Image (cartoon, rainbow, N blue to C red; front, side):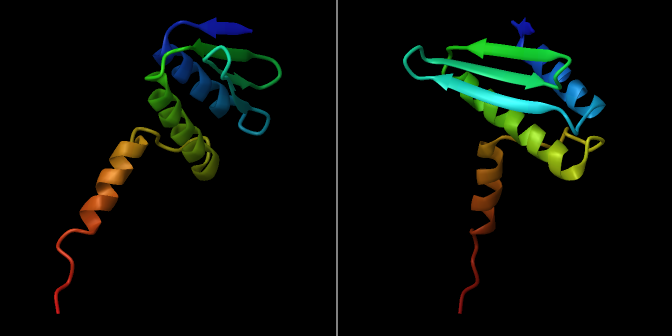
Length: 104
C-alpha cells in the first residue's frame, strides 16, 4: 500500500495500473465526514495506490479522475484521455448550445 503526496503522480500511476490490467483494477472513494478526509484508492489486488486529502479544492481533482476512469472504462484502456475534461468545461459547452435559438 503506497500513499502518494503528489496528486499528479497518483493519477499517472493509477492510469498506468488500470491500463496494465483493466479487468481486475478497482477504484474506490471513501469520505469520512467526521474527519473531513477523502481517501482515493486504486488497486488490482497486487498493488494498492492511495491518496489522502482533507482539502476541499481536491474535490474538483477527484471529479476529473472520475471522468478519466469513466473514459477508460467505456472506451477501453488504450483510449486517449487528453481530451477528458472536468464538469465545468462540459457545462460551458452545453450552455453554448442553447444560445442563439431559432426564432419564428
